[in-house]
Image (cartoon, rainbow, N blue to C red; front, side):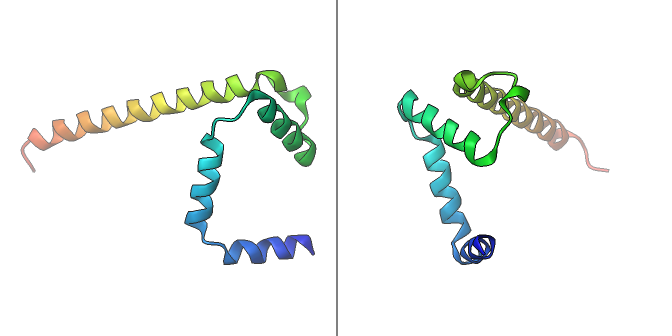
Length: 95
């Protein structure tokens, strides 16, 4: 029954507003102690097997920040390559 209620709620909620709210909450700066409480609650709720984790729960915040930095640099590199490619092709004569 809970699944049906959840799916109904998901159909009724405005997706873009919900996504923006979740994104804002994810970027919010919170004290480390609150972060640990939230991570433990997530682990319990979704039965995460921490034995498989490369970094322990204590290092999760740093690992997530490192992953975010890697993703940002990959996106930036892709944007730069796209712009270089576009600039190169704009100057070439069309066939």
